[in-house]
Length: 297
Figure (tube, rainbow, N blue to C red):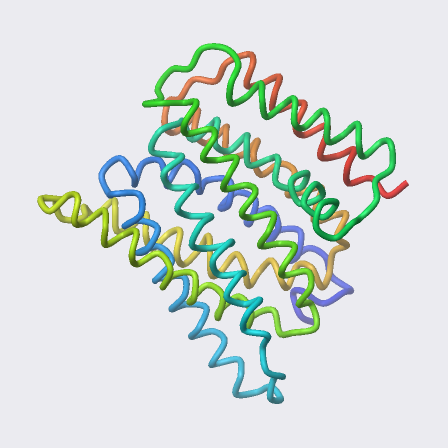
């Protein structure tokens, strides 16, 4: 019996815990990396590794599968631009200015951002409890990013604002991907990641031109690039798709709600960052709002 067969949930549960841990660590690892590597250069290098891994997996997997239908390339390009190019431009620059803990907590707003964008662009309707959840989450993001004092950040207001833009970009990416569910998910992700990576080249080149004396990447820098490219982007994505075949969307969503909590804890423990009472309260509001907006009854 396969580890991910519907009859055995152990492998899926262990995998989703691993995914939440790795994705939760992404903010802290990125924060460390952009202290010594220009943010856009780091975004490019990370996604070059991710695209290479995903393409390799796709072509190996393709040999044993029937031909896939042609992709709608216009939408795939938009997936790459929103989910890779612009998301990582905002995400990496955000973590240059703000703390990893604050960035992780703001990312908890992603499920609510997806719902808000679905209302605006897909004309989806909301129940009263979901409206209450959205209001709670928005209030929480404001408390995390813009209320109280900030320590350990170059420019917390700017960084937190950039993270909100990153969250919105991921929301657009998710909405586009929802409209392409009839296509092979691995092929879609491999192609959109590759396109989005190409889109990062001009920004990375501009930063290199701005910093011609930029030093060579340290061993820790390369380890960060490989860790995020291979594990956070490629392997976690493959595991995530397998998990979705075994666990329900609600079960997966419940686990993913802990992603920002894990991210904040990792930043506090391993980076020695401080977190304010306002940020804790804001994180609780965001998580509560996400739970309310995800309710089906």
